[in-house]
Length: 170
Ligand SMILES: Cc1cc2nc3c(=O)[nH]c(=O)nc-3n(C[C@H](O)[C@H](O)[C@H](O)COP(=O)(O)O)c2cc1C
Image 1 (cartoon, helix red, strand yellow):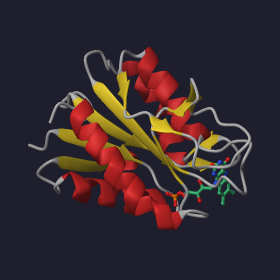
Image 2 (cartoon, helix red, strand yellow; image 1 turned 180 degrees about the horizontal axis):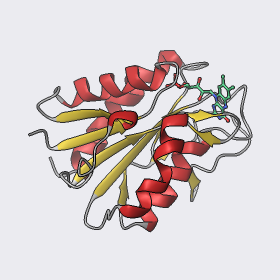
Image 3 (cartoon, helix red, strand yellow; image 1 turned 90 degrees about the vertical axis):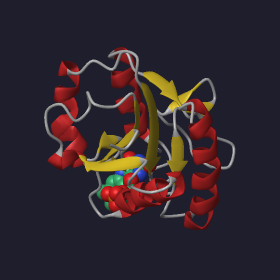
Image 4 (cartoon, protein in one colour; image 1 turned 180 degrees about the vertical axis):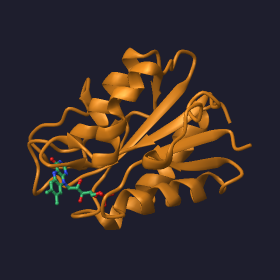
């Protein structure tokens, strides 16, 4: 079984593509198991100590629709003792007042349920007004912008995965 689970939601495919890139960077499906949150089954979260959560922000500061549908289920899960990393895709130009809010909404909920957040990411190579994903001046996870900065995505993923491997104790 893979060591790490990556749970993602994606409406137009950008977050899904990024999820596959992150999986590849870790070493493939032997290391990271991908789960589309719309297909997730009871118990899938319980099996892993290390996990990655991926969610784009939609509809001005909201969760992607499949995550929206799953959000209340998170109240039934216990994340104590688990290390949880986050990534999001968003649009800092079109939605600069709500850039990456979804990542912040999910991190807040999962941390409340005991999850230990790992994989914080600096916010200085972006231009936006406000984000619920900012904590103490850093993003709670990897912020990607396929709409405006897709040329930076590969190098951002590579650097983040190096950092995460350390955080996950690999
Ligand atoms: C109607 C609409 C609303 C959006 N709202 C936000 C938003 O509030 N914040 C943000 O950062 N990005 C926002 N975005 C940008 C998407 O998050 C971005 O395109 C994302 O990569 C889509 O991911 P997906 O293809 O995996 O669904 C919005 C895009 C659309 C079309």
